[in-house]
Amino acid sequence: MSETLNRLAMVIESRKLANGGNPETSYVARLFAKGDDAILKKIGEEATETVMAAKDARIDGDASKVLYECADLWFHSLVMLAQFGLTPQQVLDELARREGLSGIEEKAARKDILRDADGSHKN
Image (cartoon, rainbow, N blue to C red; front, side, top):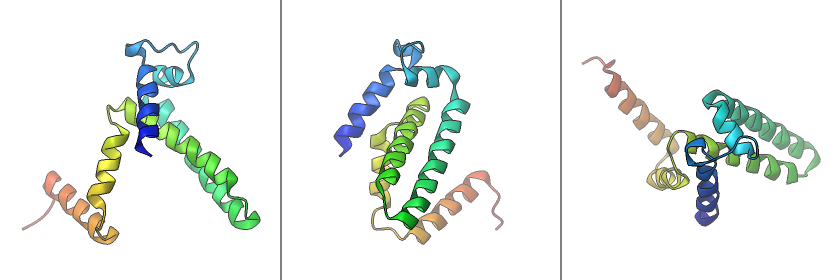
């Protein structure tokens, strides 16, 4: 599974302007040229389309659109990761780190770390 993500990440990385990506010929290079806000806006759009496809699938039983929209969401998330110098492997490593943890406990631990980092806790 991660081989596909890694190959796609390498192609996305090659589309960065600093790596020779051409906004005239590459959709991804065009997103990179437009910057963070354009990439983030696209993720928001794809997330909404994924949610709407899932709601439709709940009614009509056809999950094919969910798969299509989720692929779009993942793709644009990979573009965002590249924009911020992150990789799919780092996401997989984070998921592996969380494996076996209660979601409730993991979320509470994150809140504790953030609270300690900003010094807002009171002794």
